[in-house]
Length: 360
Image 1: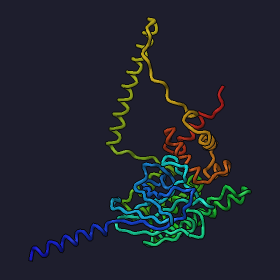
Image 2 (image 1 turned 180 degrees about the vertical axis):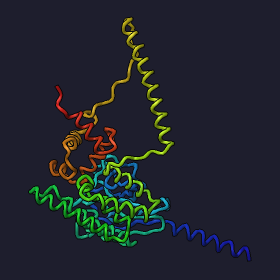
Image 3 (image 1 turned 30 degrees about the vertical axis):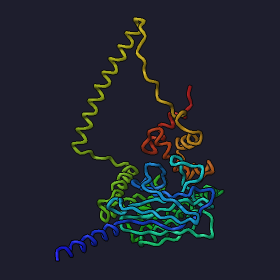
Image 4 (image 1 turned 60 degrees about the vertical axis):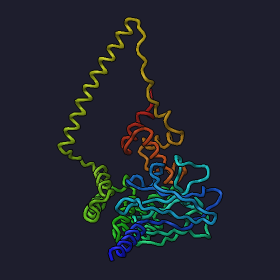
């Protein structure tokens, strides 16, 4: 009897393993402008929502000649998270991939996913862009994500609006639509995606209660989500709230401060030693070359965007000034932050002002 039971339990165990596997499949529109490969990237921070980087890719799959693809796995974190599917243009690599919207170039879609789920995405075959007018089959939350995309993506054409007042009205309308969607959406995660698409720089000060109230909702509905802590820190930054450090952090900060003082003393001693050697006409020790300047680190386009940031321009204003998509501006800004070592817009502005201020 025992011998008969053991294979039965083995069958149950193997069935559970299969259930835990996720599947993302479907059909995209593909032509010679696009590489026949689809990438799935993890969005582990809200600031990564529109950022492309090789270190975000967790899976890829080939696309056949008809546009069909299938991605499978069972190694996702044990919570529902945002993921992005996207294609790359033929001339691009993992390191310079871009996200495009509108026209013939919509090459990405965001979904919510966890182990054990299946999502199917099919682009409209009568159109050209890889994900244009796509339809989705799967959990209710991904249908809500599709609804959100219909609100957001058409508005990326802000830079094409000719008159400033019309532009402001359009931006305000998008903000209102996103706010209303977030307030009425049954999924807290999809509501978070909507709020993350609002322009915090422009609208936080106008309605801080809206952003603060959603923080309370997140803490109640998703207390352990990685996005909850991330959102709280983002709101604190825009609210200019001081972060109270725990005792261990204060101790660590004091230790680092003492270490820094000791390092400065050593550097001063080293400088005096170099000066002594120079006075004795002895060749000083070779010192490493200085780090490259911002002018050397950035491309011409990145320098233009950084200069506009130093002037206090918003992302939409930068897109309008340079006649590029808003998503392209966000991609450039993330690369600029990485190259100059800035963690937020305020730091980038300070560095930019020192770089582009007139010199005597």
